[in-house]
Amino acid sequence: SWMILGVSSLSYLGFGVPPPAPDWGLMIADARSMMSAAPWTAIFPIAALSSLIIGANLAVDAAAKTLGVDRNRGAAGR
Image 1 (cartoon, rainbow, N blue to C red):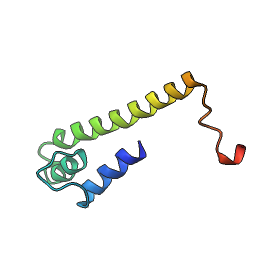
Image 2 (image 1 turned 90 degrees about the vertical axis):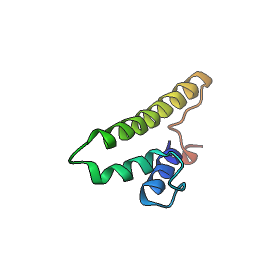
Image 3 (image 1 turned 180 degrees about the horizontal axis):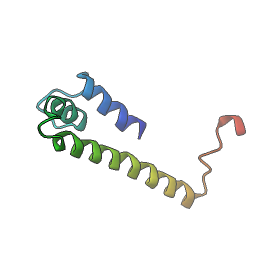
């Protein structure tokens, strides 16, 4: 989930994929100028990106719980 957020952040700042490629960070950056007239142009990509990140976290937590892996125990706990 950190990588998804990182790639989207880089695209938002202009350092990600080139503009013709579809990317949620690029969509959010393009919608910045239209926030007062059409706020849904930024809200939908933000909601989709948030849903993907939350869904990925929930899926990984469920997989870790199923496999019996303790994700809360870091390297210091070993």
